[in-house]
Length: 98
Image 1 (cartoon, helix red, strand yellow):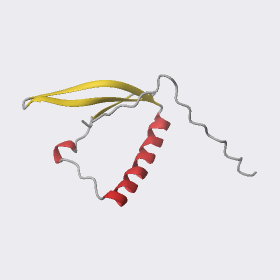
Image 2 (spheres, one colour):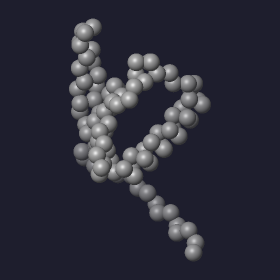
Image 3 (cartoon, helix red, strand yellow):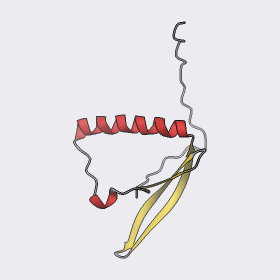
Image 4 (tube, rainbow, N blue to C red):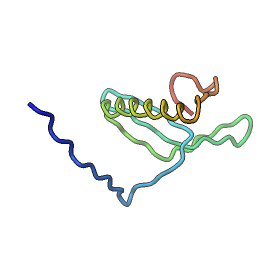
């Protein structure tokens, strides 16, 4: 049995499509799916941090794993081009990435 020909993929943006900047991503998982909650972190004072969530995206476990793979590939390529991405030690924790 041969490999079936790959379908032509056409990307179409709907009227609801929006782009936004997020510097906070929270991940919630259940048996059925993953929820990525995107937001913008602001620090109005030295003792207060606010996260304004603006979009939640549900992914199947399969799509979440595929996202991990494609993000890893893109980060590796980015670092080859621009150098190592360094994370603040306080950001290297389990749970939400803010």
